[in-house]
Length: 459
Image (tube, rainbow, N blue to C red; front, side):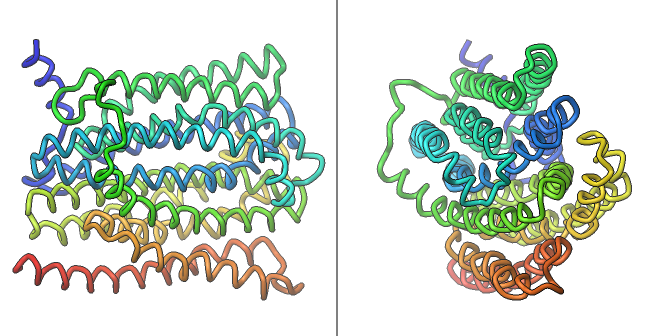
């Protein structure tokens, strides 16, 4: 029985330390892309259903929460990156005991993170939305959506941490299967709650919570049935201090980096809110479409982390540069193709979210700037992934603080305040500008780190 289960588990895992990097990276990223797209569909289904069957105010209420949700969750999800790096490194080094302790520590961290987010989201929802200058006609619905959404945060954290652990050993297929099941249920419940039961934004939020609980249950069930170091055992669930500190060492800077980007996005969202409900709705719909491009590119960021970490653990240092070049080439192709396809098919895509021409026009303005240049964002993220895989997390955080957050905030609080620059296009241009600057700085950082580590490795 043990051998049968072990064989079943192994077929989903991947040795990233030998063979063709491109072939294995594509085998790793394609299921991850599909998983990420399905996860995005949870929110997209919310937006499409309320936009089509409730109205533009409900659409704005759901969409205006996106930046805030990302801000509150990114801090804790940064810890999952720390877990991913450690699990991949111990897996590559075949250190079973270290691997087991890291896995159980990570799951406990996810539980505590989920509880903290539920408290923050439920108690502070209205006040935070007021600080974000959410329009008064949207505020009640936005607050209701946010509070219900955050009730399911423990499930969301469990799924994301569990998936990070599976990704670290090369398993991106089973999370895809689980999200497929949860995604179908989410869409069905959206239609039931909104169209049949007339629950408006409360219905789509509740459908998302239920689907997240299902995906979390399935990924935990998977880990319970696995063998080896990633097997989840209830009796072993605890915080192992050394592993927790190592997760913090890598994950905490990643968390702050996520917050840095999210803070700038929240401030930009607040600036978008000042243009009224129509622009907010168009911006939200466009951001949802762009999200599909982003998560497709982000799969190569995740690949850079896992591939680099496993090879460092296995002392295959000569493969590090090849992993970076391969991931960058792939993300450039994906970003250019998908980003420009989003713009080309912009009107029919936006038409899935709203029938308002004014809302669609507002959405096209955003995509004309951001989606067209999205490959730059992917290139920047891959550089960050490689640095994290090498064990450096503070450096990309500091670079992002200056290059992304600093530049965007500087623009918003200076030039944007003057009439000639007080436009949505002016706001959106801060994205590609910050991506170019931050990517260039990350390249310099990688060259310095790689040279330093080459001396240590004797390579």
